[in-house]
Length: 456
Image 1: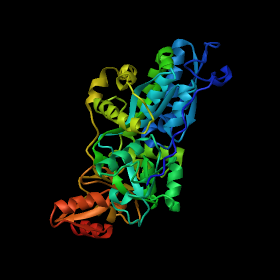
Image 2: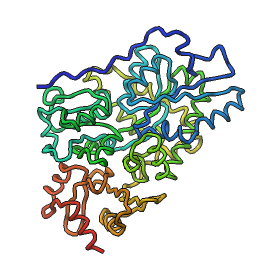
Image 3: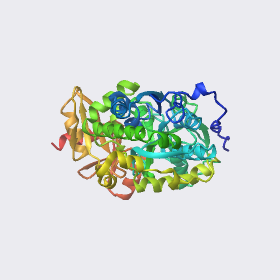
Image 4: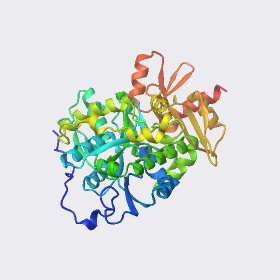
């Protein structure tokens, strides 16, 4: 039944003229020891990487660190920022010796490790940007009004994803758990996120499995409804920073400067979440409300540069998914992970930060013109507060009652259970809850708001 997915373009390396690689800090500056160009590949719209990309760049943190480093060692450093839509081209450029530092998701990181080893240009995972310990960074969505309400409904349907991405991994795993063969029972199309989003609107695909920030953005713009919350898998997903081994060995001080800058950007995001969301929105054109859904104070992503054991363990489990799709062979995950540089950048505080996990999700309301959001201990309190400020609410965020995944209140599926109001990202999880709780029933968003208002 399945049409064979188009494979990713192989990441091949050809002999490159010296002029083409002369911009790279790892190999290129033998002729001019007083000037070093550092090339950073990032994904501006993959907002789980902003502390190593979009936000970091807008703050100028890396350039400040390099200026200070340059004064110490008498070298002038210049940064070349290169923006890509996915991790694959970053890996291609890195294994061609043209990118020194890059950021990407967990599945692309494994491909990065495999290609680097295969082409004798090894790379190393040197830090993490953002993570979700349950897997909530990836979501499967359909068009609003779609008759598809569960994974079982995807049999025989056209589903768009980016093969080799974390979102593809979520799709494969979710279908496996539902007893559906992703190779035979669906028509899987290998598409870039923007292409898949357009295909969903055009009706040429029935569902889209993608990573942050596409699902949230499409939902906010009333262009998609969540079908499957990746956090249902309860398997960690994350994005991280990879560096070429040759660059790390040749320019360890520069790599540490990058990681110190990443720590600075992470601290800024934590201390000024609304302003950080506005900066990223301004740089990318994404709705600030969608950026905040993932990157906010209680957002889906937790930002932390430390390389946690839970994430390394998850990375090892991801290998089999990529092997099954013939995208990687054996991957030495332990050899790929190298936390020496981020430990050095953190100093004595690394162990404490390594043990920390993200905050407990809370509901939030973001009012127009506000420089901070209002936090609430229950979804009902958030709905009540929003109702008390008509015309002033930019967004109301509520955590899924079972997975904790934050979602827009007006796009959540609401359940009344006695005096309690419980939001869910998808109809499927709401149905699972009502089936297990006699008396609980699904209600409309309007009814939920009305009940929350009466409770006052």
